[in-house]
Image (cartoon, rainbow, N blue to C red):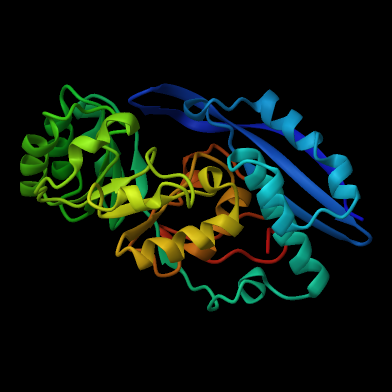
Length: 326
């Protein structure tokens, strides 16, 4: 039976990454490794304070599963015995990776998916003063899709500055719950004139009922309001897109279910990530196939990455190679 190891790791960010809730200079991740015979499966997660997660608690929750894993816990059983969140994500993805290594088949084939192809990912610009964001946009002006972190105050000036710096890029704006209900329509009308394609999580998750039925000129995407299968029906009428992140769904297994559920409810799909290494992006690259928006730039924001790592050609993200994951 598989043997479990769990390790907390820190990866430096290139500079500082800032959103409406604060800044950080490092990515704190948890690495899970499952070993059985000559095979090894790995998964990575990012504990997120917004959801009450800490590295210490995630490590403890994973180590608590050691006996059940040794007793033959299956990936299907994992969905029932462990709550969705970062800890289950790392373990679920490690199970997929181990299963693929043992079967000698890629995860996409085991999951019944089409063979993955390269996809265009967004590149994220941290929240900052307009001048700083304009310069960051100018340096990334050759990227076709930029995601801007906003948070109230000078948001229109920030987007205008980015548009000057990158006049041809498609833009996503992410308020990270930083707006008020009265902000949404006036800001959206101005942002529409600046060519913004998507607004991500404008209101706090507990206050987003104010979005129901509004005639917004830009599609709205649920992030903090959307976790797993539970609550998906409520999103209809509030949002037009849902941001699927493995750390929220608790792994690839439920993420695949969320994707199918979103399609049935005519919700568009964005595939997102936390700031993390290529190992965390690799499973998400599978569900990015066919998504209308892909935001898997975590490794591009780091000062260094794992070796081997995912291949990026500018903003073109290639599927993971087996030596990394899957």
